[in-house]
Length: 245
Image (cartoon, rainbow, N blue to C red; front, side, top):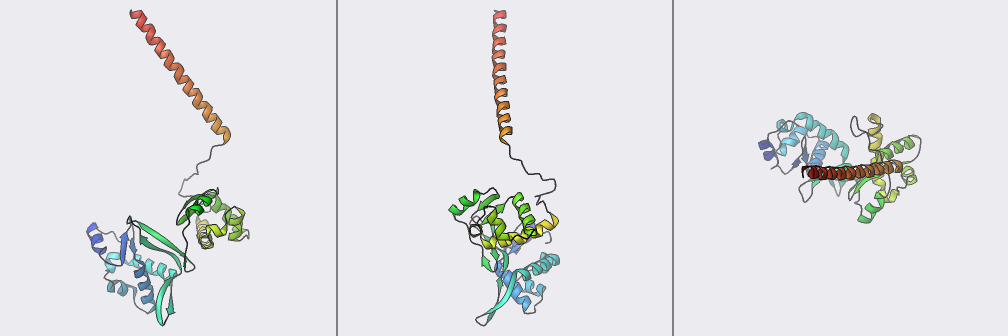
């Protein structure tokens, strides 16, 4: 996307097909994405579609428009239902705004919504050492589990089997989520086999019992030493007072 002034952004936000701006992207409504895919399937030019929706391609940028076309045509398919053609999402995620006007993505796998977790399910999932974080609509696995998963998957094990053998019930995690994780991790592992978050990233090591014990002893020693120094300081003050007297 081309760099836009705040004035231009405010102007574009008046368009019903634009949901919000992020730092580097325009987030379009799901309605617009479907409209683009459907009209492309009817032979219409992508630039003409943007123009007909009140969006100037010069503002958006040709590179950004081409990228949207490439992504959206993979995420949707055109079907005929009750004599009418329509575009339906088959994968990826569509954006909505929550009550705080923040962007939220609803994941679709195999043409179906990925269900939210209940509070009880969240608590159960958090018990597993390979779960880094879990929220109502999202679960994040540790770097260690991703590495283990790819290794075993490449050795011929099925994705559901790997989850099950590591204490993660596929029915609890969700088969569609597991399918999405498999696809994403395989892709990530090609360029980043260690799943490092960024260059130079090193995971924080958990302290062993011996390290915790040693740390506790050091703290106790330092506290004792501080107390001794305070007592010595008070003693010296008294001596100085007596000498002056």
